[in-house]
Image (cartoon, rainbow, N blue to C red; front, side):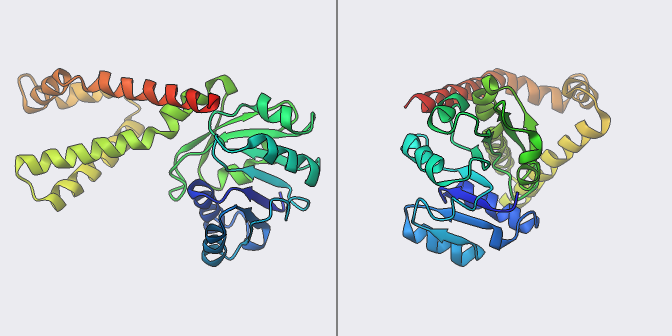
Length: 266
């Protein structure tokens, strides 16, 4: 893809643009963004030296890849009508709008338009994290491979799993952040200085993930190795089990999935 045009210049669009430029997947001359907020346009143009505009039609005709990066409650139908009228029929539309299905987008666009629905990960600056991707029958993986891999990893899934992927996979870092924060607080509560507790919490989290990947063992197997009879570890786990930790986390994921589905109907 030569020219990349964003409709919507919010935080997620900016994160993707930053990663694409940092990873040299695109150069600044290939990227443009439209947003109704003039100050947002000015910020993106000043910060990344890309072309920004408050005109909904500018740059659409020359775009090879059009990224819908607006809110679910925005007027998607009118936006798609503008794309239909102003862009090349060969341009691929990539939607990162939560809750809006490919079927709904297709009803607003050309009948044979390539449409790719993406739920982007929020770890764009790290090169880690999976984005969930679903394609319509006219789209191919090759059309957006370099774009998608420019801000993380890609997991192709059936669209029926998109809401689950959003609530579990994309919201996933939130659960980890909260766990690490709580773990560091526990160290402070036990008597460690904040800086030291934070450093240890981060190292243990990264180390535990590396250990799972290195050994290819199930977490329960590593727990069994680490927990001696009547020892420190098993006593700590006993208290954690009593706190309803696992069920609470699972309820959080189910709530996030439910909310994703709700957004599509609002």
